[in-house]
Amino acid sequence: MREEIQNASTLVLKIGSSLLLRQTDGGSQGLNVDWLAAMASDIAQARAKGQKIILVTSGALALGCAKLGVQRQDLNLAQSQAASATGQIELVRGWQSALDAQALQSAQVLLTAEDTEQRRRYLNARQTLTALLDMGVIPVINENDTLATQELRYGDNDRLAARVAAMVSADCLVLFSDIDGLYTANPQETEGGEFLDVVEEITPEISAMAGGSGSQHGSGGMVTKLQAGEIAQSAGCHMVLASGRALSPLTALAQGARSTLFRAHANPLTARKNWIASTLHPAGTVHLDAGAVRALAAGNSLLPVGISRLEGNFERGDCLSIIAPDGQEIARGLSAYARLEAGFLVGKDSKAIAALPEFSDYNLERTEMVHRDDMVLMTSPNGGTK
Image (cartoon, rainbow, N blue to C red; front, side, top):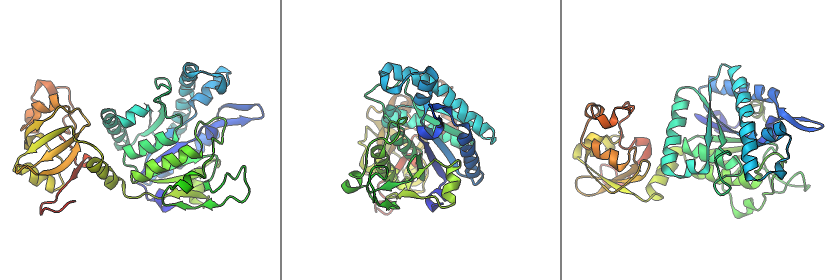
């Protein structure tokens, strides 16, 4: 197995529709329970090594179409959403049954594009997924086809999986599909296509190698897989494209099955902090006292007790500029609170916050204004950047 998979602390596995469906001469007839059971066994082995696992699974629409006896290409958007809602029940039930057999807890999470692109929703989804992983639960994620509109839908789960991997700062994303990697030309259509073992950067030449969707059940193709690779690489997450046709695809990779590695450009934490520092425009300003400046320099989160005043009208998840007493910007980070809530917190410690009626329903085990994982220091204590 590639060391990028073997050494990953958090591993996101994307499962294509064609892998989940039991094939017969008459077409797809429901879930391939044998494949699900073998995949669940692979996941159990990864969990036994201490790896955190997230599943991003396709298949709801295809299962719904089979159950309702309709053809996908004949459906309009509303009908496709209805079919997905029908198939989603069977899809989640299948995963739950397979994971239960391995004594693994699972949870259903439905996301739309907005959940990964709007910062407030992004922060909520990130915290939920992190809490599930910390509790040893395996999130089973699918796109929320029932609520998404044509303009908002990803249309495939490859890019959704990459967004999820970036959201949770995963180390590696594995896309399991019906092809074992990237070729210079589609091997199903052209002879002599060269297999690429490692892709360091997705150049225009690499993008030109992509074709259309290779399966009647999936809505993605090599184009969306390369787009997922770009998202993952820029987020500091390795991506591996591999065939999932084997009953135990992770075991098959460990035994030397071929795959293409899209190598990350940085580690996930560095990539996330670069995004905060250089991409996001601050929506508000936080002024600190000297004690808070020392706490941040020591690697701690920003607590309300060290805040002297706030500026701006920001929402939860917005980027904040963090200012030292001398007026210098020393950090940027994502706010855990909206401006209205934050106003009650300024200068207060955890006990004082817990006593406020406005926060009686909050879980105050974490009262950070900005968590250290959501913050980047612009200068070090001696004045250099870090």
